[in-house]
Length: 203
DNA sequence: ACTAAGATTACCT
DNA sequence: GGTAATCTTAGTA
Image (cartoon, rainbow, N blue to C red; front, side):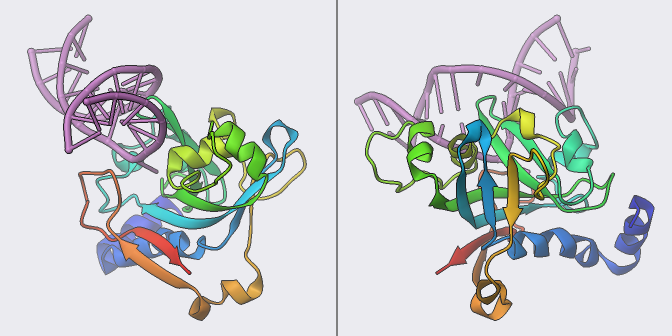
């Protein structure tokens, strides 16, 4: 779908239709795994917290003022990574969810560790061997998986030479009726703070 | 050109 | 709970 088509639907039918894609993707991604082979070490985790950022009606999105050098990858088509620098200090990982030129994505806020916990603990500079709190924040996820700007704009699906990709959950976890999702307002934003577009996977 | 604010985190009291 | 660290953008002049 091209931008003009989405704009038309937005005007005619309200913002629900346009929002549906990315907001649904944010929920669908819960339970998927992220696999990193950065530095030749395999590390992975299950996505347990996401946030949706949309083009229309979302004043908190990086794409709200159009494409810039920083947010360029957010305007790629669905299935790419958008990695940006947060507060000049941390990296944050997003899964792009709209067609080329739109600018929508899902922020990966938290994962549960699966593989490479030793490496994760070293990267996170944790002193104890407990993984508690190691991956519960977007900056922490990127530090733990070795993610930085060099993965910005890459495909999020596995291919030769790929260093970071997603894999679907086992079928029994992917069934929507067995997945308990909690929705809350998004964290750390001021504009559009009423939208309940933060999603958590409850056990 | 300058300034304020930001999808954060760690460390301090 | 308060704050520093530090990069990018938008708004203002």
